[in-house]
Length: 468
Image 1 (tube, rainbow, N blue to C red):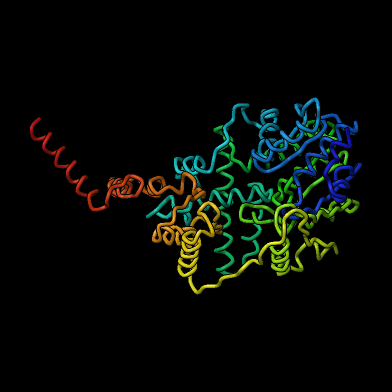
Image 2: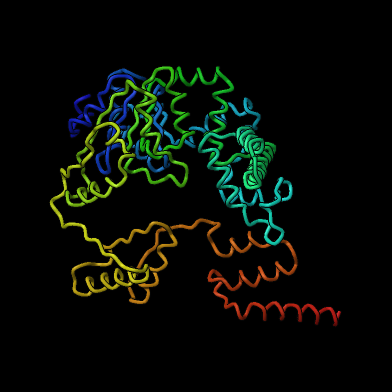
């Protein structure tokens, strides 16, 4: 059976899959089969009798990735994966909390609020929050999104409301001029708001996505019998895409793996692009510091790209030195193409403005399609953020190039919802809000007609009153 599990693996992958016990860091670049290594290792541990399925925990970041891992393990292990715990970090934390909700003062049927629901939750309780400078009279809801982002980052870094309050108090005590005092007062207001938010959420049996991790940590720290039960259960803990973990998630991994020490993570610090949502590249760099006896395996055979692309990417990433694992650990991470045939060198086009760039790209696409070199389905334009796509979409439209946009601004990026949430509750603001919503592209109404419609409605109401 082991022969089948190990079939098709290169030397580095085979080493990682067959690693016996103890901490393991698998440094695997883009396209080198990180997920393959994780799933094959799960199957290998079961097949070799090193662990029963229920003694293995595999954590990843998306439902799609978790489903893919489950499917692969099911194909490799004859009797299925039913008892292997394969989940996202948040799904695992949620299950942990629901199984022990009363231990932390929550009902078993607590609700997890999305970001949109968090905005609504805070908006409906806006004047219950201890806000002054961050609740301007002219636009009381202006900072709601920023507050939610702040609370989320606090949870990413495992900072409790009490810790934030204590930090703000220290800033106030140490303030020796007006600037420092003003900063301390601002932080005190934010810390108090964070604490009130947590109180209101708990009172209403609600949590947010960050709570699924930090409340799980709180549970394990406060209830040793719960921690011991999970530590005894999971002999092996595996984490995919470890570079995407934040501080709190790494703390959870360390706690769960503390008893047996069999923690294996795959990751690549060069692919850490989610710092904006709390991912900590330091987790990869500090793994070896926390586990000084950890084995380190580097996987460098790439199955996705040709060599010219890999060489260009490697040259570019050198500008991140010396804050890279390759420099700190003295390893070689340069990728080698093993499947793709040689291809053309990447080309760099430089422009003075974003508009010039978008125009050139759109024109190039149209010209190449017209001469039969490309088809529209051959082309993808990658942008850093949704806003960066606007110039390209306009340029494509002007040249009649069909396109499909896969970005999603979310519910609170929709113009009609954004207008609704930013408005205040006065009668005049409601009239302006209605006019603005009717005039946005979603409802295909021109702004010039909206005030006339409002006037018309008032005239009709007045006419009905006069005849009644």
